[in-house]
Image (cartoon, rainbow, N blue to C red; front, side, top):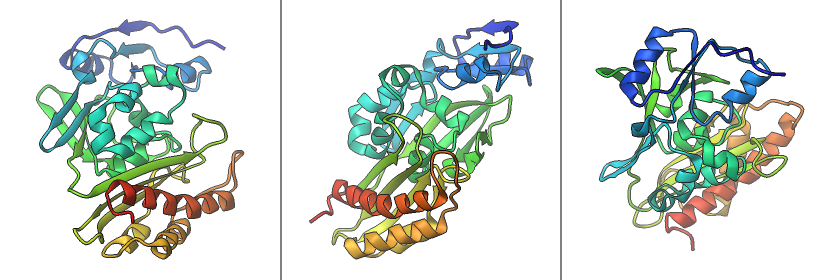
Length: 293
């Protein structure tokens, strides 16, 4: 099957030009970034559009900016660039973990972080990672009008986000982790690089004595998408993260996060994965925070 003919195609070179095109074609345009999700959906006619706006020439959206306050990623930063960036690998290993397991090298060389987030597939890798990192996403409507949302407020339901049809996701802001912080991400899929049956992101911070002062556990591939495991996260705070505490966090997360059955896995199997994967990721995050024995 082939997509319906595209009547209008634009290749802007700036954010301002992109926003103007979005406004002029409101309700009839789709933004194309890496095209790794949009093009297959257009081809099988799950989506239709009269107009495509190609973001690949908007260089300002492809910047990675480090600062004393944290990190800002432009929406057009490729998965391969997230994977290769040493600053991200050192300070935000959870994001590096996620980038490394997306698809295959061809997909990672073309796909973008912004495209993945806006697509909002419930089994995608980045949503759980950016929620665990307490990221903030900037949505821009005009050169003088933008808003910033916490990542956990951006995803509304599977394949649906808080971005309006005339808004452009321009940047993802990651706050600087406190000292003695660590994070980790892993997913279980049917084949390497496939979408997650279940994924787990864990980010934590330790005090000078090795006790956990804050933790955030997020489960991906759940019924409604990336879901914070609030009770499991709260359970870790103030404690030394020994084996018993890690196992209890896994049991708590498995009981609190809604999961469903589909052709790839049953709900029971997903819960069992959470029980195993949460303690594993907490221990890995603990090791990266410098708290492992």
